[in-house]
Amino acid sequence: MAFVKPRRGSAAIPEIAGSMPHTPLEDLDRAVEELAAHKDEWARMPVGDRLAVLGRIHDDFAGVVDRWVAVSMQAKGITSGTPTEAEEWLAGPLLLLRNLRLLGRSLSEIGRHGHPRIRGRVATHPNGQVDARVFPADLYDRIFFRGFTGDVWMEPGVGAADLAKTQALAYKPAVTSGKVSLVLGAGNVSSIGPMDALYKLFVEKQVVVLKMNPVNAYLGPLIEEGFRALVSRGFLRVAYGGAAEGAYLCGHPDVDEIHVTGSDRTHDAIVFGTGDEGARRKAERRPVLTKRVTSELGNVSPVIVVPGPWTPRDFRFHAANIVGQLVNNAGFNCNAVRVVVQHAGWDGREKLLAAMRALLAAIPPRQAYYPGAAERWQEYVATHPEAERFGTPRDGELPWVLAAGLDPAAADDICFTQEAFCGVASETALGAADAPEFLDRAVAFANDILWGTLNVGLIVHPHSLRDRRVAAAVDRAIENLRFGTVSVNHWAAAGYAAVTTPWGAFSGGDICDVKSGIGEVHNTLMFSRVQKNVVWGPFRVWPVPPWFPTCRTAHVVARRLTKFEARPSVLKLTRILAAAVRG
Image 1 (cartoon, helix red, strand yellow):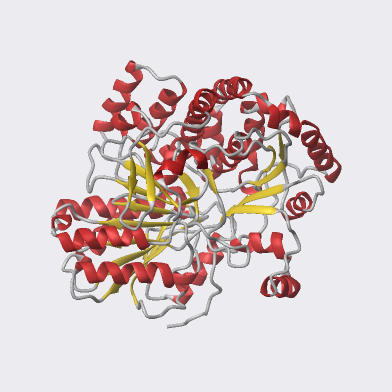
Image 2: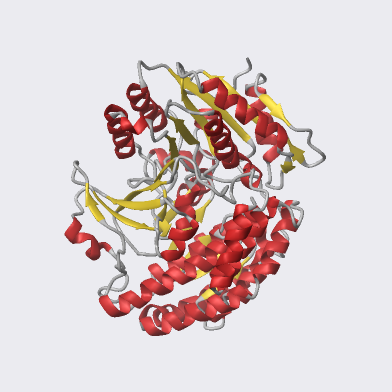
């Protein structure tokens, strides 16, 4: 087997021209100057006025969602009226509208109580850590996501009585001097850039220049239209360009803070510079840029499968669950499954792999729209020529790849050390005497061997949890996994989609060892001192979730969910449920 020792980290993405003209430097200066002139006004704006701004954004953005989805599908080669269309509704306007609504609710509660209200229970674990249940957020969540929960685990040292003190820090005491924040948008998922901007604007009370990623710069005019309540008053500016424009804005003297979603290589280039000099500065802990930089930088995302008494139906369901985490958005997601971790002695191991192979063979390859995908794909298959390929790609497409049976002791394997950011996943198996020992070893493998700290999944049969030793091992795993989102039984993207849960890496990142990033976004309850999220879902759910590749009505459900989020009604609710049961 050919083997190329990789660097650890997220994928290197080549620069492209993009669909919008680059913003001239003098226009970038003007944009930052206008934001700086209005930053104190924004910081001092009363809560009631902020609510009015949010309400207008909600109404204006609801008017662009159809065009938003249409241009996104065109750019990604998605055929309208097919289930794949659901991706652009679910990960785009649906989440943006939800974010706007939940921010509005939190601002209303700040106005009344001084902090957002925690509607769920607050628990203290045996190790002293406190968590707050933030999902489901309302009755609609209980209807649409029956059985799902989301808990925010606080850093050690935060007590239950201290939770309110950790919330909405920008609002108590009220911040009166503003800041200009640069948000470097992501190019893969349409909601990321604008939701990152919303976090800076409404949670941290900073005005924002949002530099669009060239890959999805086509969304910029729609953001300006949908967010014109901010643009018209000098609180938001949208800019276009590549690395040169991004570097210029990062170094601009009137830009106070930076948030980047992308690659750890981009983060290091911003903070330390490039080439040998940048590497030397990083080793010496001498950043060239001393501004606060927050980030979300990807992950080699594992799914740990706990052995149990699975039925054929269970194997089919979770094959769709796992494969869906790979093929969604053609594999261009930072939280896509990259390594399936199984018990070497489980008699279900090969059954799960067989079910995954059958499904991968049935899902047509997708357009590899993200820059550098073919080169990254080739690097993985050159390293693992034995890996299985699925599908017959047309021009511009790539086959799905599954590299099963990797040696878990090969710590430098590219599949363990570098995020693929294309349609490539792998599988490995760990030897253990029983399920509890397997779980302990799988946690150590995920924490210490796999690169990144963003998200991890666990799948465990409810009958397995009847064994006290297994249940204790699952609890131990959840406590010990060093990832920003730990999701049980379903894709960790649920932690992204809930919006009430903070999205980001496990706490404790350092600019010299940034891993999957520093800080968080979403987080509509505005917590500080967050360690991670824990999301639970049922082992199997019905109807088939619209993010599963086996949901035949996913596009109908997703479109109706978005229209419901824009303007809820009982009629819309019944139409969503009717479409879901046909899936």
